[in-house]
Picture 1 (cartoon, helix red, strand yellow):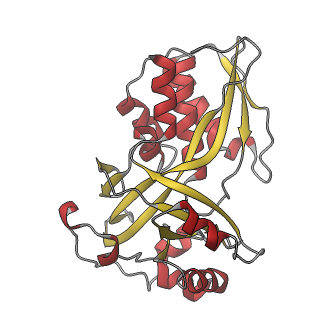
Picture 2: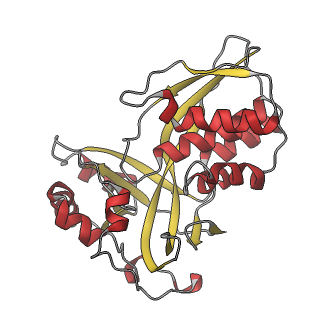
Picture 3: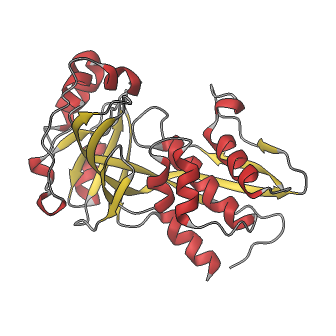
Amino acid sequence: MSATPNELIWWPSPAKLNLFLHINGRRADGYHELQSVFQMLSYGDELAFSVTQSSEIEMATTLEGVDDKDNLIIKAAKILQSHLGCQLGCKIHLRKRLPMGGGIGGGSSNAATTLLVLNHLWKGHLSTHALATLGLALGADVPVFVHGHTAFAEGIGEHLVPIQLEPKVYLVVFPNSHVSTAEIFNAEKLPRNTPKIALADYRFDITQNDCQNLVLDRYPEVANLLQWLLQFAPSRMTGTGACVFAVFETEKEAGQVLNQLPTKWRAFIANGVDTSPLINALNARTE
């Protein structure tokens, strides 16, 4: 597969859900031991890259409220460029669909797509493991998207075991609240002693999100949203929020609830997938 010189190729930058989040303890360095399932979704942002002969890296799309120095996309491109000693640069285009600060990994996914695609376009030939290691310096969730598989996670989220789950459809809703991850993880009332479970024992209905009750107490709009969704289907907050998801068997069922959603909330429907759409797209390009 190839594109004409002026044609932009749009690469997926998918969302993820934390289907559960158990906090098992706190380490001496302040990080938390946890367990989770990272569920890859079929829906997300899209990125396109125009390779340039100059070494400059710039955004062709302005990301409102985010300076370039704080933009994970720019950071990912620069850390890869430096690691490779690459003299090429790029102009980066973004179609932003995922809400920022929602707990569904938008920024981390953007960084991972940048690392994977520029490694391909700049002919870096780095392994997935090497790219995941670079990604970890940008954020704890970036390696999840670099590996690109629905996975059972342990440690501080870096120990990943790919898993296959029964196909489900998710209605993901953003309540227009922004939750500070640091605030929640530093809160005294956060549970930190949930016993570990074995991967073989994982089921959605025997797990929970240990951050959820704390967030519901502090963010009434998240609490209102979750209460509304629970009328229709099993529902839970993802990560430290603020997004909440409901689990359905079919897109039709999810769509019926989406049609009733109050207009003050934003939402999308996505399929749970075992492999990230980005990985599939890269494999198609390199075959």
